[in-house]
Image (cartoon, rainbow, N blue to C red; front, side, top):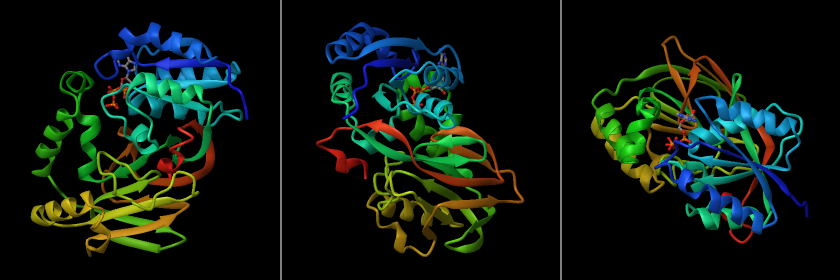
Length: 305
Ligand SMILES: Nc1ncnc2c1ncn2[C@@H]1O[C@H](COP(=O)(O)OP(=O)(O)OP(=O)(O)O)[C@@H](O)[C@H]1O
């Protein structure tokens, strides 16, 4: 088994409720006790984690540890994706939302998350490319997906998850369909008015654990889920089906797997990549199979599938 000794910890001091600021000495000590010598980079602004991750790869660190929320993780994988040598990635889920860490079964408690890293067990996972950007968990678009990056960071810090729900409810009253063309080898072409489309790498998205139940992080495929035009009552019914993973039988829902997908629209449609703003359509989405190694719990490895 590989042994990773020198780590670069890239952390967002503003993530979550700023827990990392209080915990940093303990985190470094626990890593040290686990045989990992760690140097740190505190991110100073948006985009800084991408630069820090590129720098850490160039400097030949054995591993990178991402401490923060999904936004920090997104920036870090965007720094690593195009590097020839990509050090494996450990995750300390200290953000407001940590969808991806949850998908991998990485514990929320910092001590357990570090113990998992010091066990040094990694698995390869796929990354997604969306034009010139990369995502690890999910890409999407349509009026319903625009909510996450509309929630200001400060508001998230203050009231956490509640901010999403508030924005979500506000959004419900503004539902409007978008005209979309999806093209992929597996399906040919779909031309539809849609409420949202999601391109899933993992099966855990925004608290919906069964949104794409078959999605696996290492299968070299995206699971695409499209919600066709519907009214508010239908939407609420389908959302409650989705909570139980029973939405694929609804005629408003299209589901397929693909390695590559082209999405175009005559409208102005923003993209959401791992909860962050990811440019606009048109976009080509491509799977990069087994592109990054992630530290996971060996005993609970099945969770990442
Ligand atoms: N020093 C900083 N000051 C302000 N914002 C920062 C700083 N460093 C990074 N950021 C930005 O903060 C944003 C949110 O970070 P992150 O996702 O880690 O935390 P979070 O908001 O608590 O969690 P989540 O995004 O999962 O809800 C990121 O998009 C990042 O660009």
